[in-house]
Image: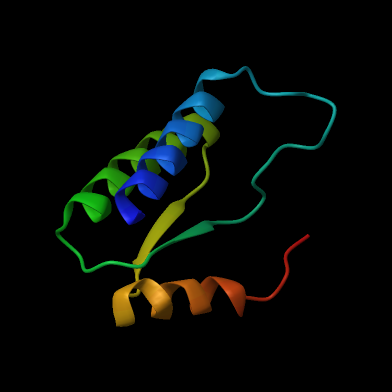
Length: 88
């Protein structure tokens, strides 16, 4: 299930990158973006996420930081995202 979910998430991200940006809202992002990976560094998910983060940084001109939070079969990373302060 995790592999299917990851593939869907990456597919959605690829589609989002292919779409032209909308200009009705102010430029996004206005500060560095943190991407939480719930798996250990050096794995397939981490490597793929870092490649996407590099492309996003180049496209948007803002830092996309990959943060690894492995443990408990993804629960630690999921809780880190769920408990993060709302940013709008």
